[in-house]
Image 1: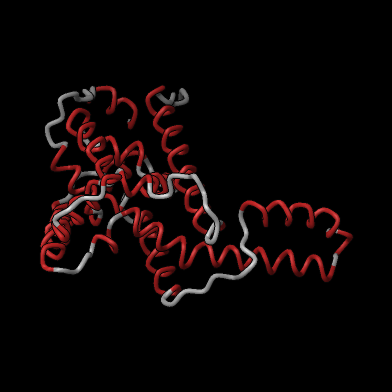
Image 2: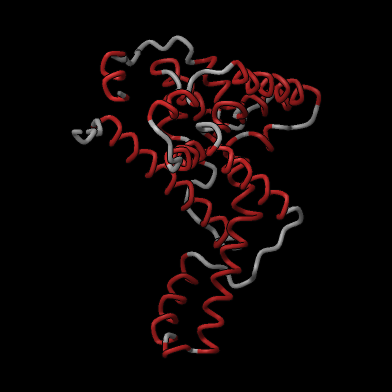
Length: 262
């Protein structure tokens, strides 16, 4: 059987997804490392591009921070190309795409589990609840917006766990010095301390809860393709409404799809 070729469009998509995720992680580390310092990095870039954040801020406060006007770029391109933001830019979507791709299943089974389900309407109900809540008072977007959820999970659970694990590992290597490894580990540790690790271990209330929720959301990709994106994400629901009838459409040849999965 001939090896399936990957289209140039898919390669470009993967490249842009990877770059977007790396930018998000870089900006996140700036907030973790430069907590008391001034940085020129646009720390809120992804939140400023998020039209759900802009909408809930406007509904709740009847005013919009000027930086959030960048979200009109997201809306404008969504009107033109459809939900490009979800598939090309969103770093949380990139994470879900990766874990979905790790599923060991046949192509036909992947297509079956990735097909439309009426349960996908759930995210639209969640979007309505979030907008109504913003009108009455509570800002639920801070819990279910993909950037908020990802940032909160990284800040309260994932990063503290990784930081504690690496600090403990390098500390043990320095004290025990098995086979003289400290000569190698210490330069690596100094490099990580400069750009990644924090000297004081961060602790947060509810970190176990956020860590468990993040783990469950990631694990659900093994049961259903991109579970968060399809059933939960309110930003995806909003962009789905805006980009329902895009000006530019991508035509798919069903004969070629059938040939690939046979």
